[in-house]
Amino acid sequence: MLATAFPVDLRSCQVLGLAGTAFLALGGETAGALPVRLLAPASARAALGLVGVYFGVVLLTAAWVLLGRLVRGPRPPTPRALLLVLAVWAAPLLLAPPLFSRDVYSYLAQGAMADAHMDVYAGGPDRLGGPLSAEVAPMWRHTGAPYGPAFLALASALSGVTRGELPAGLLGMRLVALLGVALMAVALPRLARHSGADPAAALWLGALNPLVLLHLVAGAHNDALMLGLLGLGLVVCRRRPVVGAVLVTLAALVKAPAALGLLAVVALRVRAGRPPLPAVLSTAVAAAATTVAATAAAGTGYGWIGALDTPVSAHNWALTSLLGRATGALLTALGSGLAPLAVPAWHLFGLAATAVSVSLIWLRLRPRPVYALGLSLLTVAVLGPAIRPWYVLWGLFLIAAAAPSTPVRHRVAALAGVLALAVLPGGGPADLGQLVLAVSGGVLGVVVLWQCHQAARTQARDRAEVSVPVPVPVSVPVPVPGRTA
Image (cartoon, rainbow, N blue to C red; front, side):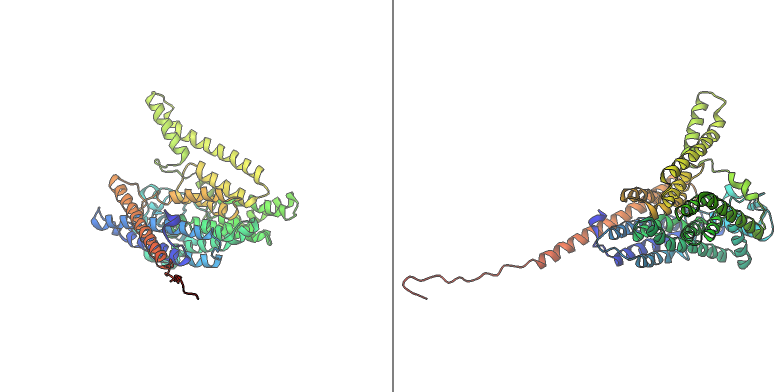
């Protein structure tokens, strides 16, 4: 339907996407991941907000699909024009409440703990006490921070500046996320050019896709900062390899998966003519020095290494977790005492499969390090013990910049579109009533788009009828017998 629904131009895409994020922001005022004092039992306003959020998601996704059609057209928009679209779409979300996750409250609580010189890896925000710890989701309230010292130093500084005030802290974390998204948007066209890909298509898939707006901007996840530093490091390392290694290491000191980017740094240096052994050694020295300096500056110690095995939700829908629960249920039905080992065994298998898959990817795609890194990070997300929709962005970001073919982009784009609908705006588990409301909002969005489609077709048909020339009768002289001209 979207292929013919609208006369596609950049302005119509801007307006449709802006309408989508505006509905997201408005609906989030009652259905988002609100502070505890604003949470209320089910009400008509909360129900209307949930409908509005999913209505907005559908409009935003439609705008993104239409923009993709424009990017693939004969006169695609420039990267600068796409950056303006990104800014317009993100604007309503700047002051919206957190959406789709309560993780931002964990960031603030852990920053307050680090600012108070508490060990953020030895215990959870419950040790902090006070109203801020009450905002953290129950599962993470007693769990140590799984983040690196670079992010915790930033969160600690933000806590000191905002003095623990919740509105200021939320705005600060969203600005940090916006900085990360801006770095992603700056890096994407440059990575695409170096990889022989289309910069506009890379921006469309890697920065303008709904997952970025829903989870990195609206959700204020620190994955944005991780990816921004990672992308910038890969761009910089072509001319300043040591600086590039430092930036990639800082990305890993936000969230650990970015450490795989050091493989790409080494591969890019070897491609540039550097002998392999010196490339490995100099990259390793830069990474180690950065790690020591960042950890010392943050004052958090090296507990983040042990915190990498932070427990996951018992109801996580990662592939290995699903298989583990299914296997455990089967073993329980058979009366086996091995049922409790099913989930850990599948998680161990997932880690082994990840290691093998990443090794094969790099052996095959060594000449294309950015693409190999994207596939590796996507593998880590899919086969890991826990997955969230925004984890897919780890790989999608770099696949967008370096995918060798259009079908690969289409498959990744379809995955992003589906995952945009996977989480409720409150960030918690869904009940039947919430699912009905969410589906209702999405259906309403589809109905509105269909009506616009019909109206556009009618207008186009009317214009065509008006523009068809009406034949004018021409009088032809009839000869009269006996009369000559």
